[in-house]
Image 1 (tube, rainbow, N blue to C red):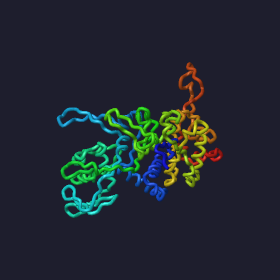
Image 2: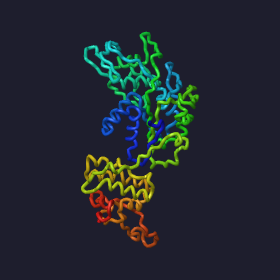
Image 3: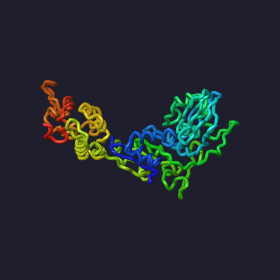
Image 4: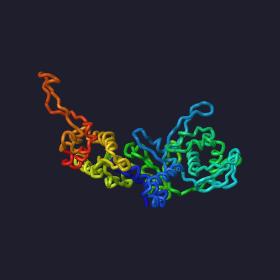
Length: 436
């Protein structure tokens, strides 16, 4: 059984985001995951369907992300009288926790807007007959997502009718062609789902609790101020403190003054780049409430990938072994950097990866300690022509004159552009005998 709170951690490029997609489907549709586990495109498509329906939300923590963004805060609006007014707006986590409703279904013969009639309805799609006889299919994922957005307070039915909804729902990817192009029927369909009646009132009794799981993915969870973002909810996310549990707790939220608890069907999945900050720096309260799943580099995914005689899996393995010794295992290179070589195993592609990704990352890891970077690349054991880095010869006397005394050690390094297009330069990373 999946943990309610889990964090995937590892160096950059190790597939943490990839892992969150599988973890999400393990929660929301395990049978589909088992059937399509080897088909990445199918998994992503199914994940996107859940995201569109509002069952999955995605957010990235950063230094400016706050409690008001995550739980609830105040938003300034201009009222009908032109005066400034403030309203309480739910954050991404609160809206997801409150988004557990089962809406009124559609039935053949139902009519909406100006002459749109339902001819077929299922849990996945509603087929409408348009006024001129043509047919239109509208996905239930889109309609459910819009209904949830209205229920959470992000948008109103008027927003859908006036085309002013776009950009108000965090993380949503509703199709603007459908929502705006059929504004004369989509709002009334959403209203029907929420219990709208002919007299314009809502019969909320048709919205019943739904225990279907929901998932919030928090990317780069260690980059935000976790204590400030979660606030008092850091306790409520514990499994034993969730709504319905034996030790369930609820709190009064500071802005809305509502009583709030975290339902047991909301899952939190985080990712953490260990190169940004060590695990020890994470808030202790957060560490205690999450299970941690390591996603280390996996060179075996590159087995069989060769570029002009260069074994890419071996190349990654030996560089990471050196980085582990010179720095630590939290700063290794992820296999994802080299995955493009599986479809394009060319020297040009390898050159691009090293120039634009690997070398800049090593510079950041080692704070431009070029000698250690040279050791990772095994340059010190290669012939000069095959070294990625070299030190230019300088005549200090000619540069400054006899009167200036400067230590003779030379800390200036330059990239050897020719090495990036030489096969022996890469072979020399694996074995110095091949890089002579």
